[in-house]
Image 1 (cartoon, rainbow, N blue to C red):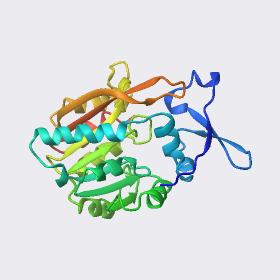
Image 2 (cartoon, one colour):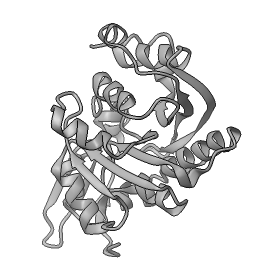
Image 3 (cartoon, rainbow, N blue to C red):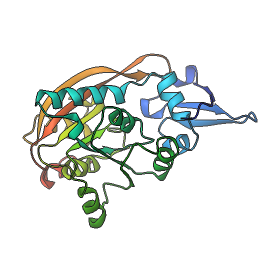
Length: 259
């Protein structure tokens, strides 16, 4: 990984009323030019080696890849199965932070998927040996040939980290990925704590709440934890979930939760 340190600055008082997906920082280049970058401008962040890691892991202390890996290992162990036999689909793989965590613990196969080419470029640049394959695809519009190619990996685990609920991965894309993995495969992901609150009536939130207690998924593990710090230094809490897929999710279930 590149060791270059970037000059970044978080906004002060003006940031206090921003929603989590509106947060931003300033990046100052070597020639003194300052650029405003939103946290969700992943295409811009991934272009700059080491910037994502410095912002989210060094400064904001993100723990989610390690936490989701930990709960997935716990769920698999409860069933007396082997973590090293997992063939994982990493949805919203980004620049490979979650994949790197899984690889460290010895999964059998690892397939990354992201919707933006910059994510794949960053992964090939910074973590070229993590994934067995990496697809730049929109799972809301997955063509038959590509779907069959992904299914040929015989995937038995789905993970997605810090990518659900803000429009980064729509409800239909998550369910498409869920249906790609084999029945009795494992599922592990994280979501912001408010998405499990019944006051949140978004399609994604309603879908997740029903899925957790549905016949399609057996819940093995649910933990509230500190995902990272906000730009004000306050903890942002998420839930980490792990479970086992019982069956594909049918279209009538999906259609109820499309925003």
